[in-house]
Length: 397
Image (cartoon, rainbow, N blue to C red; front, side):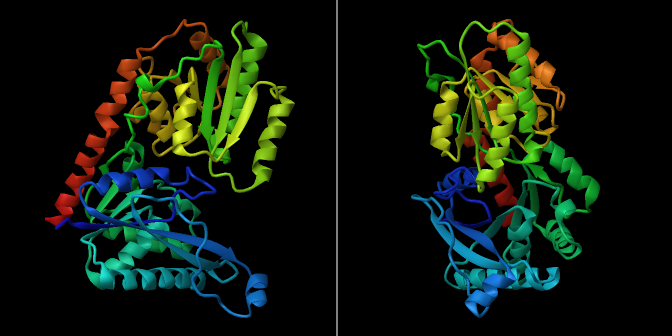
């Protein structure tokens, strides 16, 4: 009989946002090869006073956007979040509903391990369930900065959750160091980077463009921390200061777009820099479509201030695409300067433009097979499963 793993997450692909938490879906599919896996997705929806008055009462749990899953057993919890309540009451209601739903599930399907993705809210609920049922829980943190955004009440819950987990997993060494400096932990954090599908993201999958257009791509999200302005400035500086002979096309692929206003601001910036005719904005595409976009890309650029890992950077490198990456700490886990990518300082758009030109003119070139193997050796299917199963086995023991 296969051992059972219950994955808890607040992020999972939906039809509206197919890239949201796609890495968790991919990891769950891998785990299902060795374990019996269920995924519970908790979508909380902000509810204000006006909505409560309209409904005349506190509503019961409702379903929101359905997750995309054909091969996995995925259960959606839609839980109303009464944002007008003071924190302790608001989050107590949220947790109570989540825990109640999980207790119902566990009565008919008891897992051997609960694996929560991120301390809030999945990790906190895993801790509460573990106290009640004695089921051990493993916690993967995707950002230690939950500490700094949380209220005092939530901060206390997060700290307790991280301290009590049977094993804390971080996706990068930078986050491991942060946690070790912040908390006293039951066990030392284990670093397991995200799984990269090195069969899809492979130089063999590249598409040779007969039109000879040089294509630059950035895949990002509409948040300040991603620093899209530096990317746009670097493109503008390149066009204004270097000779352009071969036609160039820039794809700005933006995931997790919920409001058009975020895209409007980016379009304004593009317009102000005179880049309207050069940049195409593509929103909320699937991982399959991302792979197709990268397959025809000549250069990938990431300007993010902060990453815990940087999945799309790793995917681009795995495909053998020359890559320029802001040195945000996490990138150093798998980017070696001049070997499989180029590291630049934050906001240094002039240096990025210089590197664009050197790759564009083939002054700098990379061995795509070396690039591919640098990712295979750390984040392939086999490596990811080996590392995670090792953690589970220690918990089972």
